[in-house]
Image (cartoon, rainbow, N blue to C red; front, top):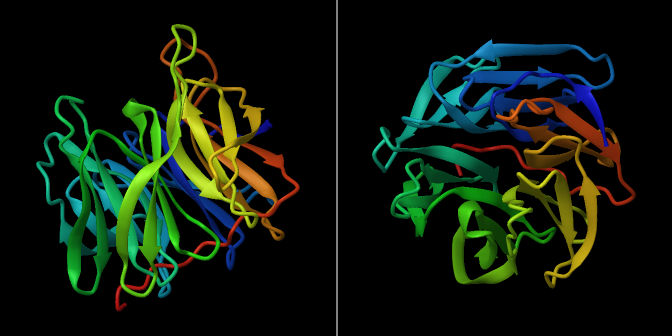
Length: 284
């Protein structure tokens, strides 16, 4: 895995491949920037956003849906606010949107983070034209949202608890039920790697970035560890498949407070393609 863009993010996150444009789009949450990167030309641009921006995804009409501190918004391609879709259902002084994923039908799922890490006051939400609906509560840091290739399994992690869950998901209704543990990691004094953002490949394997763990893990659909890949930065935050054949795996990272590498985008070629993403449809 090699550095492909020194983006200098404070907290790089939410990479998503926009196939039509051939761009990797990602955010710097606390740096409040929306980044767009063309890996072929190496052209990189970034645009300021008014608030902390936790997650982003393309929409079918152009521009992006994004989870900001104040709620879910439609943004234009330069990161400017177009329209608010829903208020943050929690206290925005302590909780903000953190991780998001478009479901197979075009709804947006997004989870929040309880920033004080004091009481598990964050949750997971689904947004469609009917409004914002809470799917889960009692969460500390929402992460790891991803869908199986058939769209009938939803993955979701609570990072500080070192656990990834799986749900039965109904793509027709957006209902998520039957939560159970998919993977539980056991921290040690020398390894605090914990599950952050995630992606799924066409074989149904789940890839998770281990924050403070300098690696990615690939798990099979039964939760067995298949492979571990080193990342040359302490804090990988989220993988995303991209490229014309969906066999380039990009990884965003966060700054290392101890001065090590971090804040850039890394990539490697993989043998198994990723599942193509879905664009958000505000009318579904």
